[in-house]
Image (cartoon, rainbow over all chains, first blue to last red; front, side):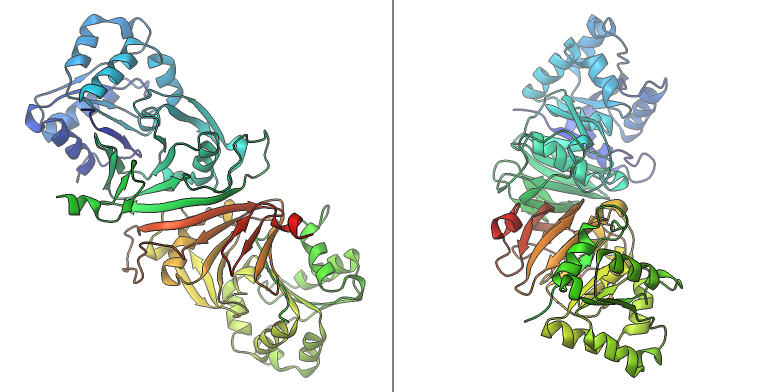
Length: 269
Length: 269
C-alpha cells in the first residue's frame, strides 16, 4: 500500500502547536518512527539539523539529516541505505530549482518513488511541497487573474500526478498562478495550501486538511472551457465551470470521487 | 425597460483606448447623450471636471458634473432636474463610505433607482462600482482565503440585488474578501473586476465583459456548504461547491440562466 504524501504550505508551526509535524510523526509510527530529513532545497547549513531537533522533541526513534548537495552525494550508499530504511521522509523548504537540479533523475528520487509506493510516507514543505507531484510549479507571478506568463512548470518528484500543488497560497496570492498551471494540465486537481496548513493524502487518495489555514481546491474536471493551448503572452485566460472548494482543518477531498466534505475527517473517526 | 448597470474595476483607460467609457457613451446615445458625472466618492475638487472632459472628447451632447457634497446639495432642485434628464450617470472612484454618507437615503439615490428602472444607464468605477448593488463591500482585508473579519458590508445604491461587486480585483487580491461577502449573501453572484475592466449588465441581466483584464464570477447557487452565519473572528471559512468562471473581453454571464460563455458577446452580434 502506498504511503502518505503530505505537502505543507510552508511556515508550519515549529514551537507551540506543532500539529502538522506531530501528525506526520504519528503516521510514521510515533516513537518507533525513523525520519530522514532532506534539506536539499534549502542551501543553508543548519536547516536539516533544525528539523532533526524538532522531530526528536516530538519523539521519534531516529531523525537523520541526509544533506544531498551534488550528484556524488546522491550516489552515497550509506545515505541511500538510510533513506531506504526511513519510515518517513521530510523535504524542507527553499528553492524548487535546487530540488530538481540536485535530486531530479537521481537514485534519491528513484528510491523515494519506489519506497513511497511500498508504504514510506513523504512530506515536504514550501518548495518541498511543490516538488512532490509530477508537475511542479517552479516559479511564477502573483495575482488572481490567470495569465499564461504567470507560471513555469517543471518535472517534480512524481509521487502523484493527480494534483498540482501551490504553497504560501493566501500569503502570496497564487490563485491565478494555480489556474494557469491547471490550464496546462487540466487532468490534475489544483491544491493551494496556506502557510501552516497541510494536505495529508492517504493511500486511497483521500486528502485531509490539517493546520490553521485553508486548502483551496481547484477542480477542473467538469470544466466547460479552458485554454488547453495557452497562447504565449500576457493576455488573461478564460475559464468556465471550475469547481472551487475552500477547506479548513478536518475537511477532506476525495481525489477518486471528487467529493469535498467539511468534516470528512471527523466522520471517518 | 431598465437601463444598463455598469460597474468598472477602477483604473479605466482614460488616454489611449478608452474602450469602456466609449462603450458607455454609445449605450447612452452617442453624440446625443447627456451624461451626468457624480464625483461624490472622490472628495477632490477636479475629479468631476476630468470626467466631463473625457466624455466631451469621446463626443456627447452634454457632460455635467453634479458635485453633491452634503444633504443640502442632494435637495438642490436644479441639480436633481439635470440628474433626471441625463441619459447616463457616471459615479467616480474614491471612498465607498463617502458615497453612502453623502448619497445614502437621499433624493439622488431615489432618482437614480427610479430612472435606472425606466432606462437611464448608470456606471461607476472603483468605489462607484461597489456602490451600485444593494450590498456594498465597504472595506476589508486582502488575501485569497476567506475569513469573516475580511469584509464589511453596507447598504449600497441598490440598482440590483443579484450581484455583489468587488473591484481592483487582481491588483488587490480580493478573492477571499468576495467569498466572505458571498457567505453573508449566498443568493447573490460575486463579481470581481480587474482594473480597466467593466461588467456591462444589460436590461435582461446578461453581463458582458469589456476591457483588458478579467471578470471573476463566483457562483454560489449550487453550493453544498457555506457558512451562512459566519462566526466572528479570524478562523478561515469553508466553502464547498462554488462555481468559478474567469471571463475576459467579449465573455458573457447570464444572471438568469447562470450560463457563462467565452464569446457570448460575439455570438450575440
